[in-house]
Image (cartoon, rainbow, N blue to C red; front, side, top):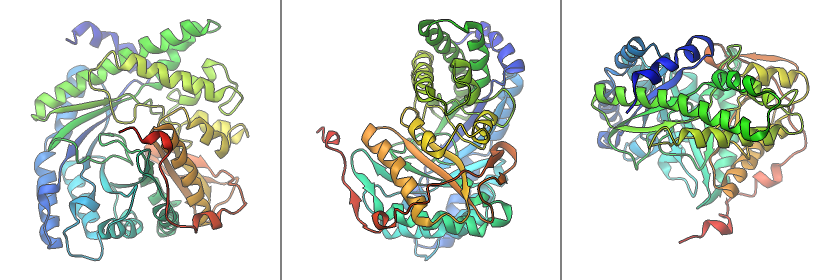
Length: 452
């Protein structure tokens, strides 16, 4: 039972330390909307989304008023469109993306995720249509987010899909070049994508889920940073205990919001995602936490160890606070959304290669990385392949959200606005991996995946 004392205890964290519930995400199954006629399918999905989610934003605002807990985003995730629309007779899924965008606007949510495909072992015709539609879909919509899962520990990595997505990202960048290629900020490629992730741009409603669910993503890097200030110079035991206790309190707030939203909407509660997610606001930074643990700048020796410690202790504290923890539940380390990360890049302390090493111990991956617009599609595919390999071998979720900013080069700055912030354009290794990417086929699953 969550009591009023726990709610009161969070007041300081909310008012002074940027504690918030980052998102309430309603997952909606669209499988029963299937139809061979594209117009009928669009009508069906619009009606289901606007019916199921009609009160989502209102309920979120009511909870905010009742408890004084900021809920930054109200979002929707849907069945991957490549699955839901597989029987639809059409050459393009762009009209579906526009329907999703209209539904999201009409119910008032910030984003809708699930313009997605799961292709870790192979691609159906529907998967290919979806991926082919991504550039135009993201260029002509405002709130639609897209993702493709190209690998898993059980199946290996679909390198045909990795190659195709390198080109897809470049095409998306070109179609949105007037806005610093922002379309790419709404697209993520995964290995081992979870079915219940509430965070964009990678959220989708997995086929293993109930018809409609509520997932909640908590945050609070500012709260963790403030707590760690009280144990400067103390040993690792004190440090770890402090992080665990703070994560417990943050997760209890998310649990409260999840239960309230579930009850008010008459929708089952799914999971709490424990991910620490930064914002461009000063004091709301993962980098600041790592610096408080003991590195001058993110990227300095010891950074990966500090991040591993942080991630593990957050999970240990969080799982004691809720019976249903899922999603990504890691530490987001986006460059554009974290002022401390931006400072580290500008100081020359943080490179893409160091970021890749850090992703071995956190469950999100290379997130919101701006690179020169002239970067080859094959190089982007190579970066994706490296990150997917980390996820596959280590049995964990990894992802890439990378933005080749057309017309900009190293030293320039990409402006995305709002929660996405801005990012310095980072250098990319100039040596080619084209022969690797052009091999085609699938990288096999690792030997330890065979556990049946």
